[in-house]
Length: 369
Image (cartoon, rainbow, N blue to C red; front, side, top):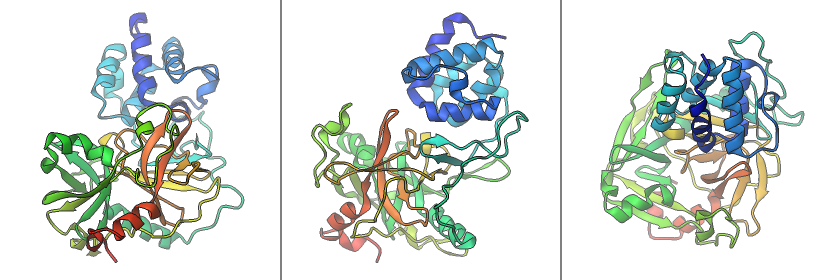
């Protein structure tokens, strides 16, 4: 049953607000086997692309499966869910297997090799010829260590971002994740939720909540003034505008036993990590407050901004991903994700800039060795 004409535009606008074309491309590959631009013209705005897509999937009687996949990627977006409920109620009940891994190459999604659609393409171009081979068990072991150290930031019971342990009782996230709560005096309601993941049987592990110490916010640096506008480089952020917040926990979560060992923490390097153009970049995140996910792009890095205070990349993120750790393919911590320029790039703060600033300040003892 086609979508009512009056709902085409508002539904398209709602989708265009939270989806970029590369992710819509992955939606269409999963559900139809054809890429986004086999359905709609190139060169349109994100908003018009989404409106046109809603129109064509409605005309093709594909709205149920396409909108079900879209909802599965933004499970916490109540406004989008309400519009889908009007436009295609069947999409609410459709079962879509949620993917914990978002794989990309050069900013373009890699099709899921386990697609249920028999007409969908198989996995292609998943590595570059010169991409380093990895020792499987070493890589997986490091992944599991990272998984234990990443948390969802919750303020007054609401998911607001991602963070990660950098010491036994210290969590790093973005300043803009906690800024409003700090100003309102509600930061004390914050919780860091570890181990919030989706299990193989489809259920969710609720994870472990750890509250903040009485001195919860121990260090921070603002974002650049221009980063609150559509022109983040005018002027570029300075060496003091690193958009981070160092939170102190009420308990030493890094010392907690987990998976047969200690939870541990990530180390903030004091020297720059050598990132070259087109290097891979991995981001472990809680996008839109969802269970922990891994986004991977094997040709991700674009480069540094003009004064070296930001690194830019193509790896996908979403609202709720602010404060996520960014890694090399070998799990070296390289940046703190903090910003996305719609349809152009995502960017993070090089971790060595933050590491040097904290280690030379009065809170250095909170960091792990």
